[in-house]
Image (cartoon, rainbow, N blue to C red; front, side, top):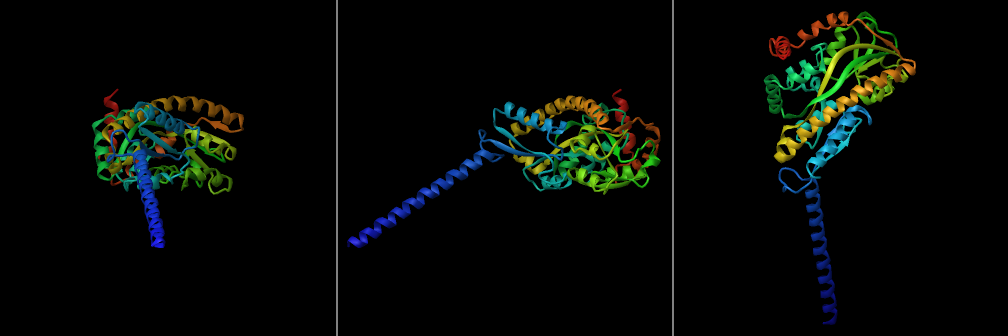
Amino acid sequence: MKKFSKWLNVFLVVMLVGMMAACSSNSKETSSAEKIGGAEGTKDEKVVINIAYGNQPGEPIDQLANKWKELAAEKSGGKIELKLYPSSQLGSEKDVVEQATMGNNVIVMAGYDFLMDYVPDAGILTAPYITDSVDDLLYLTTTDWFKELNTSLNEKGLDIVVTKTVYGERHLLTNDPVLKPEDLKGMKIRVPNNQMSIATFEALGATPTPTPLGDLYTSLQQGLIDGAENPLPVLAGVKAQEVSKHLALTGHQKFITSWVGGAEFIQSLPEDVVQILRETGNEAADFARGVLEEQNEQVLTDFQSQGVEVHEVDIAPFKDKVKPVYEAFPNWTPGLYDRIQELVASQK
């Protein structure tokens, strides 16, 4: 009988320990849910959102992301936490946009040239020499035309969260000087992996070579490409000037970009969270534009001190060369180029 009593006590102790472990496990799961939050959580739960971009720490885009993180936390009273993933840590721009369409927890900086894979008309915002100023491009994002564009993107599983990001004016940094379009003949130029960038540099006579931004320096160093194009702070961020020593100020694209999330994911968030994300994202974009302007001047000075030859070029021949790009996309809405020009003219 004593032996039976002894084993009964052991059995009860084991059962008690098991119950305590289960309670502990449930507690941890609840804690995790409260930490991540989302549409199904309570109003007091923290919402953690992944923010992805290809740019390096310290660049204007990275400073924008950090400012956004700070403002979102402040305005939400600590409810919103943005986890930043610079340097393409979550994958290439194209891949992360695809992840977003599948409902993943991510908001990614994406050029409108990447979004044209989903809604072709989006690409017009990154067409070469499409407007005379960045402000004209920003104006376009306030129009009914742009609202229609975002609605079409929603139907494809994407939602533009932030519209006001100025990425910069794109120039050419090459191994050999480029003073006119003909100088690009036979040159392998690194471009983002999207239709607009490829079509632009084909029209200019170069051989466009899609390469992830993070691989740009190595590709230059190994001779896989002969040059690259991007805003000055981006070129400096990947240290391209250490290899290529000729900068042509072509300004072939005045570039704005979006921060886009999956429509399913954005709709799963509480409305107040989405509103804060949009407001603070645009506020951070305004801040980063000032950073960009300061860095442009500094980078130009730094490049010259590092032996980079800066070439002021006549952009008229470049503009003429890229005109076929406006006719290169048969899936654009008929008359799209003219509509954009009319919209820009209407606000002047």
